[in-house]
Image (tube, rainbow, N blue to C red):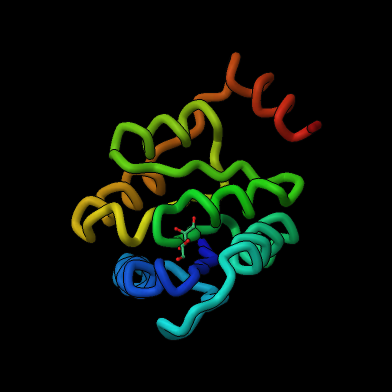
Length: 143
Ligand code: RB5
């Protein structure tokens, strides 16, 4: 599985940690930047990650900014993206089971590293439930 990762400066440190964690799990990573803590604009990175997923360059994506809010808004502007901002393992599990989120958003300044890795693992290891949730996901994708 190939995972696109992207962040702004506020999410850079956690993005690097997530990347190392994914590589340790034996997954392929497409790093779309940013590559240091110089100030950049999160919309560009959310868009790039969303586009990588929708175009098939990556299977899924993980985006990180200071709170995860701005970059998740940006990713969700790309048609076909279902990006869920998660601050708990329960949210990560549910955003896969119910929303079939193809992009996960994290807050680099709001979620500590250990919890962030548990969130990443829960999201990767959970299956979409389908059924009644498929209809709702289809509705999202038609918007
Ligand atoms: C950047 O300072 C900060 O606004 C950004 O990382 C993010 O938190 C926006 O939602």
